[in-house]
Length: 117
Image (cartoon, rainbow, N blue to C red):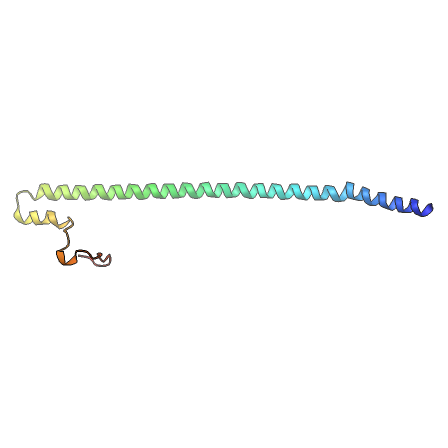
C-alpha cells in the first residue's frame, strides 16, 4: 500500500515534469525552427527577386546597346551611300560592309567562325 503510493507519487511527478517542462520546451523549439525557416524563405525570395531585377536590367542594357550599335551602323551605311553617290571608287566602299555570298566551292560546308574574311 505504501509502496503503491510512492510509485504513484513518482509517476505523477514525471507526468507533471513532462507536461510543464519538457513539452513546452519542445513546442518552443518547434516554434523557433518554424520562425527561422520562414525567415530563410523570405531572404531567399528577396535574393531571387534581386537577381531577377539585375538580370532584367542587364538584358535591357544589352538590348539598348545592340539597338544603339545597329542604329550607328545604319547611320554609317546611309552616310556611305549618300556620300559616295558621285564617285566610282566610293561605290565599292558601300559593298564592303555587306555580306558577300560564298563561292560555289564552299557550298554545303559550314563557315568557320574563327576565320575573318
